[in-house]
Length: 58
Image (cartoon, rainbow, N blue to C red; front, top):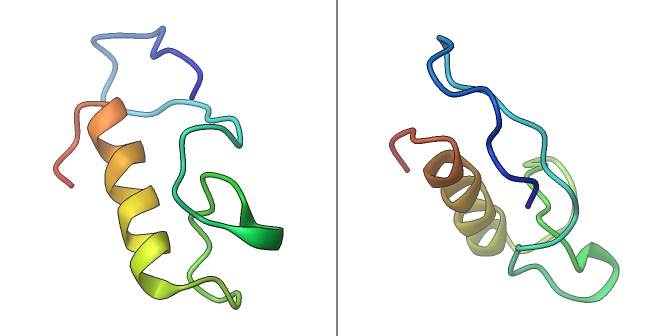
């Protein structure tokens, strides 16, 4: 993930790379897309990681 660089802005936001996720195979990344064929549990964990990275609730 790319470091959070704009602290103090609301709402929390950021840019993420493909690194840091739990998805596997063709989705081997920080896949947060809920409408693909990735395992929904992996997508949920990836979204949780992204939210934690910007200080949001998982």
